[in-house]
Length: 349
Image (tube, rainbow, N blue to C red; front, side, top):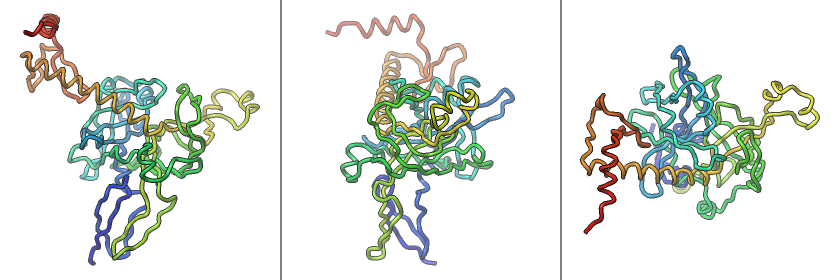
């Protein structure tokens, strides 16, 4: 059967060309959105891996195609830290399998504002991986709101993709998609179990594994619509990343029930209202994170210029430190540090 070329510009307005058979249609939620999701977990005392939360791959495209980063809700890392100093990341590969990789908790960088529940990890998407990065050009900002002629409003439909731990996939990751609606805008900070937060409230029954999930909105239409122009399908949809899922409110429906119920019962109740960190807060933290990373790289270049050895294999008698980029470099000795300091402070002619 002959294939027809179609335009798909739903991912933040970026034009892509796809080929479909006669009568075939694209799924409303692009597969790339689910491919940007990875699962986080931990290894127990018996060295068995367990899933615990979600993460999203993003790529900073504001200044060209930059490095990829995983982002998640910082409290997910706090929960994982109870089981050790490493985070297990479950990734999909193009051979149809999922594999675990371990990353030290210290490599994750948190948003400088402790009340912003976001953490970053600079890590590449390897060719063998079946993942995609969500470009920062897809993020909802004040600039894109003008381009799209659409502000985020109460009642807008959103969806998020992440971990449903009861069915996460045996051979490979299977992120679910859950739908909700904006219930409240950012009029004032919201008191949460993580402190006062600048967040949107979303009417959706979020669960623990969905913390760290990317949240999207179709800024053009609440449902899929199509129109055909000269044989080419143009989808009247445009998806923006509007935030990161953080958690949900637990508790009864009234103050009277709250006062009468035991604490362990209150913890089991999901009020059906979740909260998410807005995309501009993610970009804010990303800027600070990448700036720190650049400083670390410049420091590495300076040390190399000053004659400090960077062997390709680690020497057992040399203490090593890891940069945000995941590169291991020697930790300078006290003598090297003082020598570097003397050279840097020496007056130039």
